[in-house]
Length: 199
Ligand SMILES: [Zn+2]
Image (tube, rainbow, N blue to C red; front, side, top):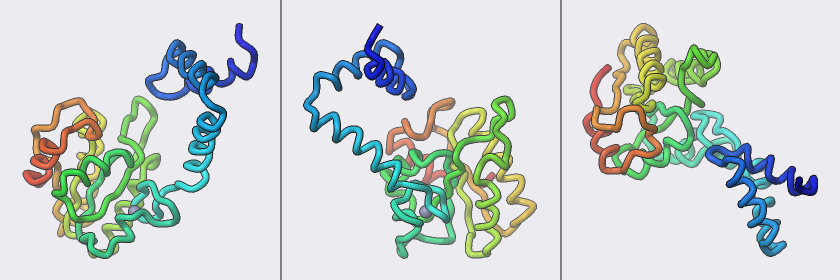
């Protein structure tokens, strides 16, 4: 129906989350109408982010270079680690200004149905950080969803055996159940953080 280059653009846009076929077409035609400079700026931005941004070698947050800004910041308390599912979860927690420790990004949540097992996440890397001995508290800030809760319980159980002297806490209830941390407002999330409890 469309010339192959247009069809290719629609196909690629349609792979983005939340973008159906009709939206992909609308975006493609928007790009076709746009100035060449704007269209090139979009493609350059995509290329640049893939070339320059990788994962922090310590916490697996997004980083420009080997370490993320938080791991490079000497003022951040290295005895606290907040465990989240995705890099996008770090931002809302930072916005609350309740937390001055470090992070650990798992890269997802345990979900046996989807074939996501502990070895598919950065769980072993978390234990290795705890084993170094400086950590006194691990805050499990996985999403308040079935998979997020299962992940928190799995890690809490393992840490209890492996590092009994480390406090393992979970964000207080009050976060909307079943939703992602990413969408929680900062006041609710800040309260959940301040009221975290032992697991
Ligand atoms: Zn980091």
